Figure 1 (cartoon, one colour):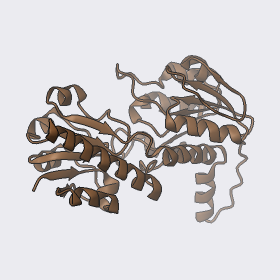
Figure 2 (cartoon, helix red, strand yellow; figure 1 turned 45 degrees about the vertical axis):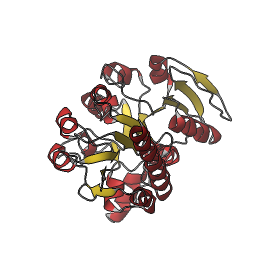
Figure 3 (cartoon, helix red, strand yellow; figure 1 turned 180 degrees about the vertical axis):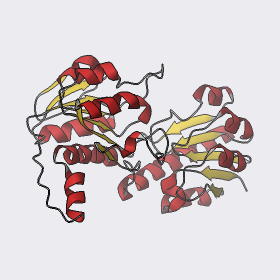
Figure 4 (cartoon, helix red, strand yellow; figure 1 turned 60 degrees about the vertical axis):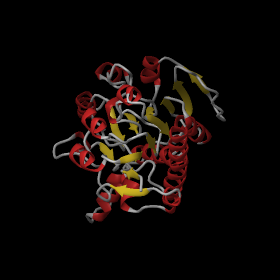
Amino acid sequence: MKRVLITPRSLSLDPPPELDALRQAGFELVFSTPGRMPDEAELLDLVPGCVGWLAGVEPVSERVVAAAGSLRAISRNGTGVDNLPLSLLQDRGIRVVKAEGANAVGVAELAIGLMLAALRHIPDEAAGIRSGGWPRSRGREIAGRTVGIVGCGAIGRRVARTVSAMGANIIACDPFRPEVYVSGPFRWADIDTLFAEADIVSLHCPAPPDGRPVVDAARLAAMHPHAVLVNTARAVLVDEDAVRHALDTGRLQTYATDVFTEEPPPPGSLALHPKVIATSHIGGLTDESVGKATAIAVANLLAALETEHAA
């Protein structure tokens, strides 16, 4: 029986019924360690003999691709492919397909939740009450604030629409400038202008081809004092040392992030800074997003394998 590797943490820990379509098509499912991101050693052990791979955000090395002698297609249960060696996969004739927009609602809602948590100091208030105190921090409202959206794909557009409906002014940066329908003020700007004018910046873009961070010391220095930075996209978008300095000096009030260079973050990492609100890569981890993304990823994988078989 032909095998398909399943590695997203949300699927290995609690396999959803949407995976049954693969079994019904005659494939044996091979799971990585439940609830954990597989490392290179585990992938090297699991990938030989697999013709298909339903992949998460785990880094895929050239060694893993070399060991995948039977692999014909990789289907992501999301849109990001920064973790994949795309040129090598193309050279090997291994197709890569993505579940476009499947988790847009979940990620957008988390980004907005992080904005509100930062503006109203919700984590600190909750922690203070749990410890027996009665903290009453003065917060700020999102209405009337300028929210900068970096990247206006499915997620960024949804964030823009929602915070606009809450009374925010939107300034956005995207090289493709897609149609964005909002109820309030909206304008396009270059990225440096966005960082200089926004009270809140939310990142929803891919990593630049040159690998340089989008959020560096210069852009942080240009931000309003006590600004909020939200990152539900990719850890590599920010220079963590520069973010730490901006937090320590008060340039940033809060860095709210769902993504990290190492997951879980090690002791001493930026995630543990007192002015960081950190969530454990849960943007797409909702019942609705997992089901939708899995269904799309499975359909894409079956179509890719069928096309490969027909060829």
